Length: 99
Image (tube, rainbow, N blue to C red; front, side, top):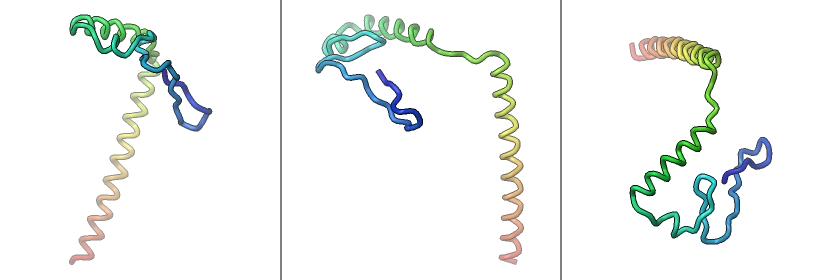
């Protein structure tokens, strides 16, 4: 399992497990047990693990989603205007240089 390191460092530490064991969706199991099994059984385990992880997701509220969308739209417009201005300046400069 990944755990955060010291605050502000950005480092992650892995949980130490006994040699030969792996951790899948919160379950410790032997490596050969994790790799073995039929394709259908592994697919069922995968779907079950996905459902467990999906319950841990923190979905944004409608207001947070709306506000984030506006931030993205305004940022895209500001960057577009900035790039347009820089493009015009460079175009004019190069036009004068190569005239």
